[in-house]
Length: 320
View 1: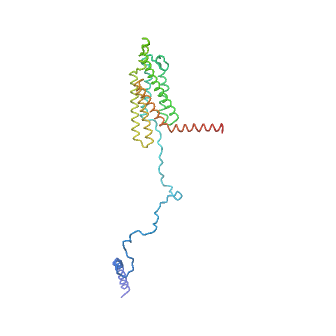
View 2: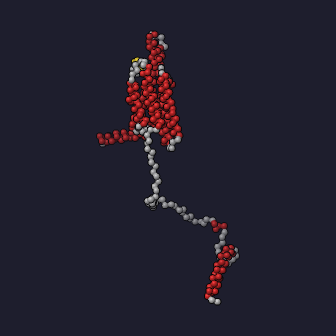
View 3: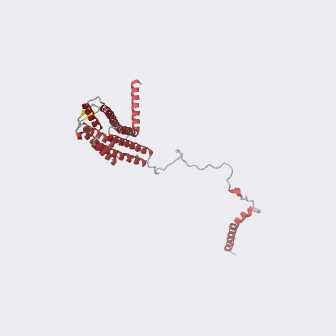
């Protein structure tokens, strides 16, 4: 028997031994669980139960700023850029042209159309129509509205000043309407008196007719203003419903309330110097003023704070 034959027998024996070990290995384990002579630990129901003792701490990600390493080429999250002011929208321009230019100018021209003397409750005299109202509207009111609606932003000093001016005029209009109503009531009581002459009654009736009259032209201007304000109020409320955040929604709601106030003011002008008319004008002015205060609240806070700091600084320089 040569060496090659011996090597073949040895290799065959090793292969057979390994094959038998692999085949009967699981049987040895089973045998060990029974009465076999192998001293292997038994596998019971408690084998898969969690063991007693302190549990290992769960893995914690490394998020300490001192140990956090960030690659240079790692992309940083994009910063949210603030939306730039694109200027007034189409509706803002249309509203300005229709309401602040057309209707306000028409209201200023209206007294000159009939060219009749009117009783002025402020002076107590009969006044002939003049061009002062038209000049004021053309040279002051319209340019002021242009700056307030299309140029200055909400909360700016210029916008606050313009809205304060506009609010003062609205308040004065409501007050004059109330004075007219009070004067009408006084004249009517005088007209019912039996101690005055026929000539005096004629003059009183003429004053009453002048103060009570709301011309068709003036009513048309009032209805136009009411319609424009209604559209603006509806637009603001709808935009508030679609707003991305609550702060923007509240601002749009405030503007919608302001437009609602302008609707009531227009309704008061249509009704003239009557109880309901005065009530609508007063209520509308209050709503408009509340809307303006809310819209400019941040700018007003900053302005008040700067004023207080300026007074303190001046005080410290003089007496400090």
